[in-house]
Length: 83
Image (cartoon, rainbow, N blue to C red; front, side, top):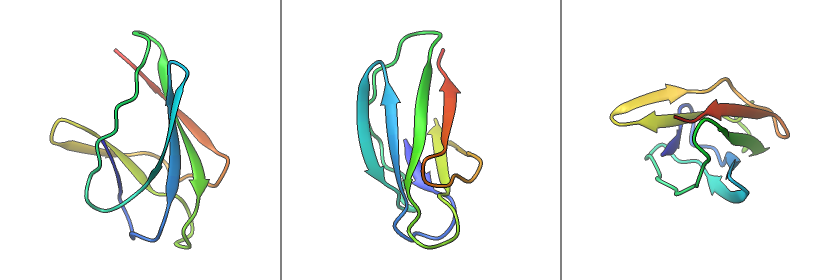
């Protein structure tokens, strides 16, 4: 589950895990996407489009907790470890 933790300004990310990629537009309202992963591997969040607010601001949600990632520029990626 992902959301935009700052202004809803048209940011996009690409989420990749286990060879499957999904491009997602970020909104303030959390959006759940299904991405497979290999246990002990990583899921990649790649900044695609900065909608104009300065950086791509994405949070990942685990249960009820939202965890903002570092702000991304287009082309920058963050690797998230999986259980």
